[in-house]
Image 1 (tube, rainbow, N blue to C red):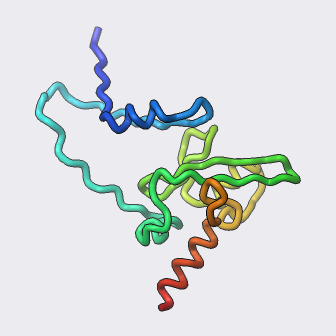
Image 2 (image 1 turned 180 degrees about the horizontal axis):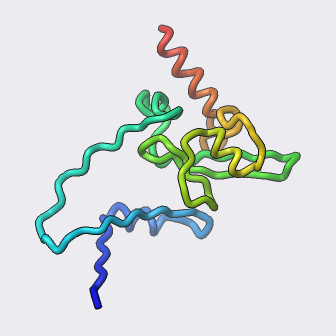
Length: 139
């Protein structure tokens, strides 16, 4: 029977140790060979899609937690920005390419995710970040 060996970078272990019981932690495994030579440096991930411009301008970073709460509907959502500019929503296995698709996955309704999602702890909405970028670009 083959043996499975899993090695984690210390940064991954530190992240797992700091996660709370309510956090969703996503781990990607890549099958390798028995070649003991160290892997070559991976190409940097370039953000694409609707959030790419915000990420390239350092207004939004990979790993940023986004939240929303709708009091009247008693609904809330949590998502994490991926390095390639998608959103991983708690309770969903696959990332969403846009804020609106991610919000729709939580609410069940077509909704403007740009105005709904905000940076955790009362930060700005994605729409406010987008307007800030437009303001920077206009100068």
